[in-house]
Length: 256
Image (cartoon, rainbow, N blue to C red; front, side, top):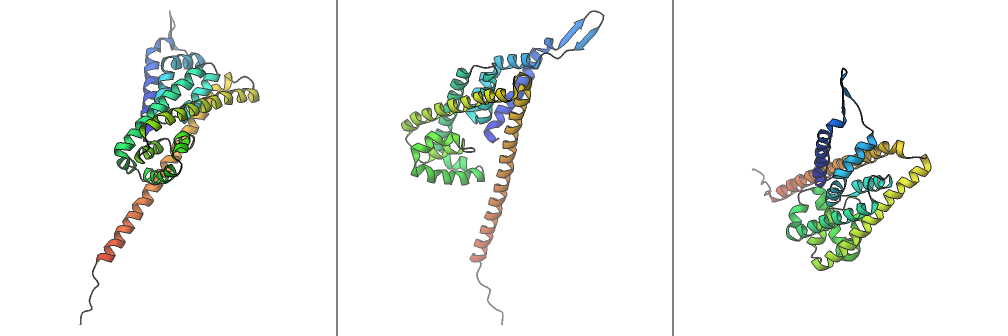
């Protein structure tokens, strides 16, 4: 998970706490002469209520900032009947489209500053600029399908001077293809899973947990990779600085 996914995580945790508090009465059963007993409601009922209250808003935020993991989750949940697949695709489209438009315009105004914030972004941004200059339209349409480029590529596209009106149109086409393709793939993943395991209902929480763990694993992998690249860039900069200082020093004359 990159910097941009932190607000999504914070939001999900927040709405989870709010949902628990506002539905606390469903957790407690007060009986005369018995007292309070904790009763766990059906997980499916809790999940359905949570998604009804916050699901599409969370999907919009997730696709606005990053998108892949949360769209896969939403597509699977749509197969299970907790969300509507058509709404999932539409919300994912608008979230992705709006987010990438924002990164594009930030790239036009502050592209170099943004890429300089992280060594990995700087390296990827320089490579992205080379690709964009060769095949600009293809990259505008397809960058969402390349893992790890969701944030960097729109910034690089804006930095490259790509025409705003053209990006507005092609970015919309790319967002529509991405939302429909990934949402449908996740939806049919549920169908394939049901064909293999029978009724998915008793496994759905395990599947959701596995998808969340997969997202967490990808985030940790990216974090460690970013840290390694930052260390290598720092060591390289220090070595370059030391070499420059060594060449600038005047040669010592022998003392007679």
